Length: 66
Image (cartoon, rainbow, N blue to C red; front, side, top):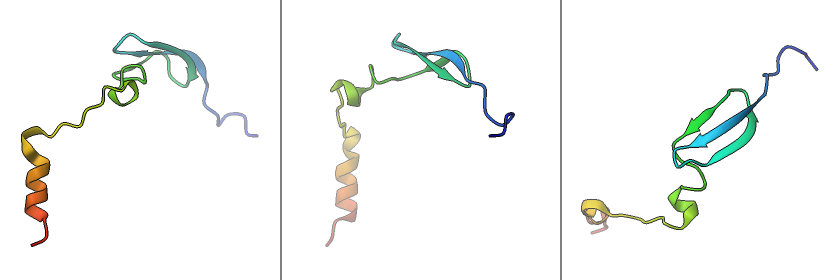
């Protein structure tokens, strides 16, 4: 293996906006993310499909077969 081509991995903490902290290894230190598996709506079961302003219905009406 070549010696100087691999990145340097360091111990780092990944911090979410909700406060969840994960200890891992990465090429950068102290990563901050906006959303994680603890607060993401799809993984927490709070996921809702919202049809704002009837966009889906307008699309379906516009492109339905005549």
